[in-house]
Image (cartoon, rainbow, N blue to C red; front, top):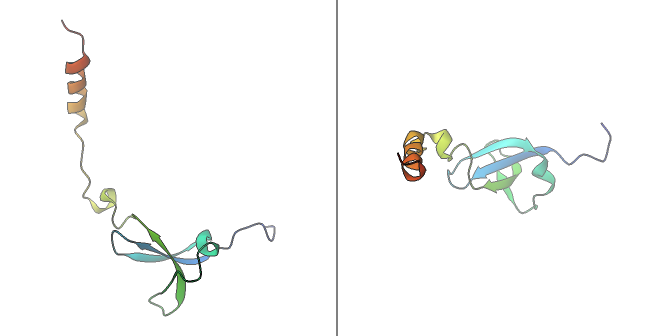
Length: 86
């Protein structure tokens, strides 16, 4: 790899504001997070933190709280409304 052209890559804590969970991973966002945005993690080290609005911990698809839409009913409603009259 060429030196000096790649962004900084390091550990970052992503905190889900809706679900109240956090997870530690690596990201290129480490270089763009202000120094005052840090959190002490479970291992005792201080890491930069990124607050996200939604993650797999709070998304309805992943939590099983998503709604199933009745697509067959939509098609029939469309055909009744715009279908040809006999």
